[in-house]
Length: 353
Image (cartoon, rainbow, N blue to C red):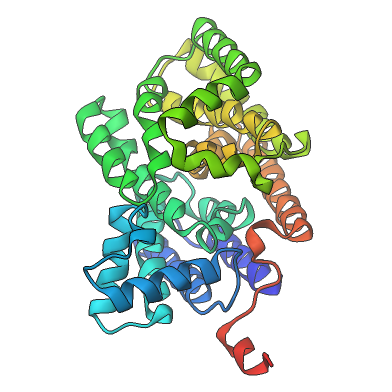
């Protein structure tokens, strides 16, 4: 737990720095390196640590002759493994390469677009996006790539958005859900928009099982999910975070209704994150569909905290956001999210019998 508290505290130190580009870049470089090193030096931290180690060793041994059992792995991730192996890296070296790419993509995006980079870094750690990167490797990298559709969404250039989404899908196929969502995120906020979206989500929620049965007849290789533990429904307790995020951005939502701007993309992302997250109460594995829109909270929440003209009100809302992030970090740790609590570093290997 201590390493994550340290990273969260490091994020908060950015609030005291002068708001000048060199200080901002220095802060992001420092915190980014800390996140990169901590993630890369973990040992059997993350539920899928051994799973990805097995994949790397198999690819490293086989080279371009990919084993049949790995041919379903997305091509981008396979190429990343092959690149690491061709450079003579072991699994540890692969983790350094993977987490370097992930950290650069996320922190460069934060530095470019966040109204408060220190707050975005803090939320990156406390709201479990950092923990995600140490477990769901393929999907974490796919989500980090997806972040870069943001400037193209703002300029209404949907063709580059689609290109980035297809690139992201080379690391995890679920990124394809962003193809329809990138159109929805650009829509103007209105009662009609949100009402129809909520109605469609409710219909999909209650018709979920027959729809999925049809889907697996088309893609039978996913049939095995029906018998795994992740197919079970999860508690509504896990919907509280996206609901809290949606309530937090309500002032931004009201503002966008009366005076539309590019911020509607971020508000829409929080809204669709909430709708998608509700599906985990039917089948927990469907949480993965909400990850891509959830990452935009790293911009949406700081912007919602700072959007008020009154300085004191912005400070109060920022304080609430900090407190909420810390509470969620402790909640995640108590439930062992992603298998990264407690943290074990490479030095733990010497202590393992």
